[in-house]
Image (cartoon, rainbow, N blue to C red; front, side, top):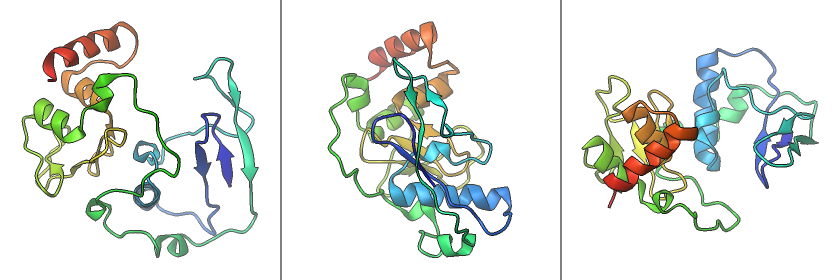
Length: 194
């Protein structure tokens, strides 16, 4: 199934499976798919409910309808989907760039290279492997991947957290990313970052 999420050209893709599969395996495959397709890796956990067709995306004004674009009734075995995906998503350096050009962000903080803000905020050096120990869980082997591009940010393959400079700072400083908390978070980041 392919669903237009109501956010510009963004699409959600779903595969109908032949049989039920363990949730841990589903989350692993979701991570592999996101990595291979350059998709949002934060939306791969089994508990995530995405926008269903017929709903409204209320992030826009006016609200935008979510539409079903394509559906096939054929079901597949998960093994068929897995065979062409990278086995170890931690080895994937970067997913293919987006097919459409992206506008430069209006917020200068969102233009900072992830390696710069990850080093500054965590105090850990980002090496050639582009990984650091995740500060949000016990992490013997570095599992927090730092992408090159600011719009891809960072992602931890251990705890499945990731995002932008704001997401990292909010988690580290135990702040929210909405309303007054976001304004305070932005102010502190502007003081912290070069």
